[in-house]
Amino acid sequence: MKYGLLKFLDISGLTFLTPIVRLVYGEEPRVQLKKIGQFIVIPVLSVLAFIILWSQIAPRHKTKSGEVPTPSVVWNAAIGIWEFHVRENDKQDAFELTGEARSGRVKEIESRLRKLDELAVEADKQVTKAEEPQTRRRTSSGRHFG
Image (tube, rainbow, N blue to C red; front, top):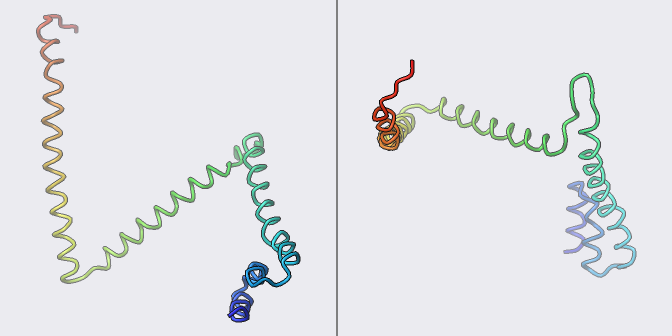
C-alpha cells in the first residue's frame, strides 16, 4: 500500500506529500518532519507572508494607472468573473436547448414570470397603501407650493 501511494504521488507530481505518507508509515520520523517543514510549511508561510506584504504595500503604491489592487480586491474580482462565467454557461445551455426540452424550459420560465407579476402587483398595492397617509397629510394641510 505504501509503495502504491508513493508511486501515485510521484506520477501525479505531488511529491511534496511523500514525507507525510512516509511519516504515517513510521519511516524515519525526524527526517520526514524536516522534509515536511522544507516542502510544505516553509512554502505556505512564504505565500502567507507575500499576501500580508501585498495587502500592506499595495494601497500605498501609486502608478500612472492608479493604485495596485489589494488581495481582497483581486479576490472579489475573481468571484465576479466566476459568477459571470457561470451565467454565460447558463445562457449558452439555454440557447442550445431544442425541441421538448426548450418547450419545457419556456413553460417553466413563463410560470416563474407569472408569479413575479403577481408579486409585483401585490408590492404596488402595499406601496400605494403605505403612501396614502402621506398623500392625505399633504392634501389636508391645504398648502400648495408652486
